[in-house]
Amino acid sequence: MQITSFKQYEEDYKKSIENPEQFWGEVAQNFQWKKPWFKVLSWNFNEPDIKWFEGAKLNITENCLDRHLEKNGDKPAIIWEPNNPEEESVTLTYKMLHERVCRFANVLKRNGAKKGDRICIYMPMVPELAIAVLACARIGAVHSVIFGGFSAKSIADRINDSQCKLVITADGAYRGNKQIPLKDVIDDALIGCPTVEKCIVLTHVRTPVSMLKGRDVWWEDEVKHVNDICEAEEMDAEDMLFILYTSGSTGKPKGVVHTCGGYMVYAGYTFTNVFNYQPGEVYFCTADIGWITGHSYIVYGPLSQGATSVLFEGIPTYPNASRFWDIVEKHKVNTLYTAPTAIRSLMSFGEEPLQGKDLSSIRVLGSVGEPINEEAWHWFDEKIGHGKAPIVDTWWQTETGGIMISPIATVTPTKPSYATLPLPGIQPILVDENGKEIEGNGVSGNLCIKFPWPGMLRTTYGDHERCKQTYFSTYENLYFTGDGCLRDEDGYYRITGRVDDVLNVSGHRIGTAEVENAINMHAGVVESAVVGYPHDVKGQGIYAFVINPEMHGEAELTKKDILQTVTRVIGAIAKPDKILFVSGLPKTRSGKIMRRILRKIAEGDTANLGDTSTLLDPGVVEEIIAASKALK
Ligand code: WTA
Image (cartoon, rainbow, N blue to C red; front, side, top):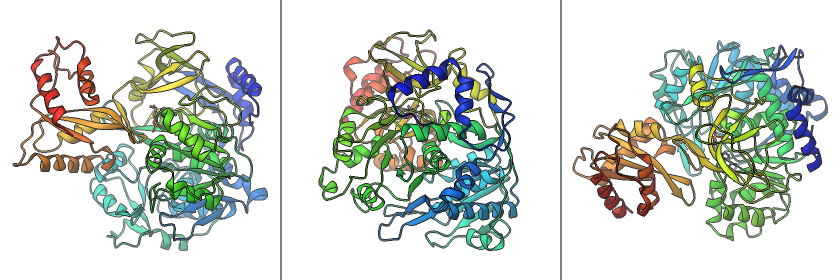
């Protein structure tokens, strides 16, 4: 199923459009099924109701583990690189990983987990995180991984939304020179989570934690009570595999639901093709498993293809800005898949961190999560790839399950800052405000997808209507991505960023409404409005306009109080970069905040505010502009 020439890409693409069922049916033959499907696809975008490989039975862990044992059992599946470079790295072969997953799957059963139960995972980037994820899949439990940077309140909301029965966590996590007390955060969260019966705690940082009798058990003790034989649960292709919460333009984060069969096929197919993965190569994706990139391209995609996947606990700048390059050299990494924000941050250290580092193993480079600017693209190409490693700028989303628009390494001619062409099976279209298709090249519009693909979301957990409203109602019969996009003269796609109220801060998706809700929870705050603005390293920064709160005497302290509140409500990742106190917000006569104006002010582009005549109180704009100029 690997594409090796541009001609083949064109042929496969054509086939995938003309006869999608045949195309995906053939791709799916490369996976292991317990029972075949009777229908490749049935779909309806209006409901939405999408089924792939109907009637088929499988277990994704058999594809990620068991099927490699005979030939590649001693091959490294996961190479773990710890936060502290002085510590030993750990290699788990496919045999070892299989054994540990089965053993931990038995621990889950011993603690009452059954097929269909939801299990929350809040862990550091250690091999046990991948083991926990796969163990859930082994027994047919639905995992909901929550990124280690979210607060107790965010965790509680997510646990309650999907009524998790179990939580898997660790005493703490290392992040550079910081230590994060994961179990403490979980303890706070669980005060408000009546459905959680058990909490399994891994010892990692060896910090003292509270252990509640009857609820909390140690990972290390539990694994002693079980053996390592665990039959893989037979799952329907359309059974739920996992839930992953992500931010939208309104309200609370949604639990995006992915199912077993289609997701597996799509993650595996896109992994092997986009990165042109060759047997024996070492592949390093720097994302966190708490996000979709880690799910699809650290765990499921690579392991389903028998690849060797590096799992890194730390951050790019610890103990110094050479860390990625040290890892590349140490593990002879062939593919490095990272985010523009990491590239920009490392660029800012100059070339010194690269001195003497042997990057000659690198063959393919990848970028994901946000638009990559040309400067970062060229730096990545020249300094890291030495002009010889193709860069795959991969556009996709939590909802798409896998990469959608991207070059295929060694096959598709690349162009700086372009995600280039759709992968086989993907039918992008650009539409105008009214949903009318914008045809031809040299155009731009809102990016939609007009035909289903196996990795797409099926629903949002517990609220199917919300899935319909968010993705399938803006434009009839289309999946709406929320992204703006241009298609150049060559038919190449370039993603220009979100067209809704979702921010992309260091590659993290954050809803402006969520941040506003968090700020408004501060006791003194009357109202706030949050917009994004261009940020050199983060891509976008968060700019908050806050109506003068009660200040307990001090504005600077009040700003810190607000940051603290946001950290409590969402997590440190959502802290505003700038807070501006104002006496009012620009509103229309019907009370709607005119964000367009605030965005311009945040960008410092106050000369072009456009029409402000419909404002209730145009005077407020002058005041905000003056105040914004005084803000550093
Ligand atoms: C953005 C991450 C430009 C986009 C996999 C999308 C990108 C959102 C790219 C999804 C890219 C992701 N170029 N923008 N290569 N990749 N995005 O759900 O706005 O965390 O809608 O999934 O990130 O973010 P999410």
